[in-house]
Image 1 (cartoon, one colour):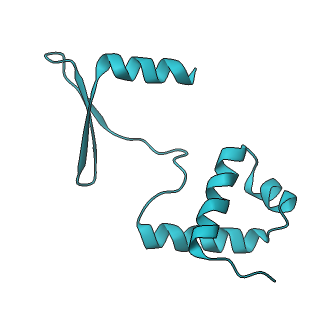
Image 2 (cartoon, rainbow, N blue to C red; image 1 turned 90 degrees about the vertical axis):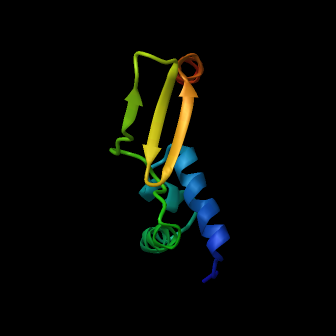
Length: 94
């Protein structure tokens, strides 16, 4: 059985997300043990304190009528975006 590095598992997890396949189907297609997939996904998430998938999670935003910015606050990070830029980005996703 092949031993993979953290970087390889990170690529595998990102490729699965990008593929649109379920984890089960992706693992079958690429001959990967689904238990190893889940184990390494958890290990990577624990190491980075980051979330690999954003399904069913909400990001609070602050919208003020008095300016033209939207502020995203997550943990100790703040991102401010122009409302028009957000409209273009979201429009591109549809």
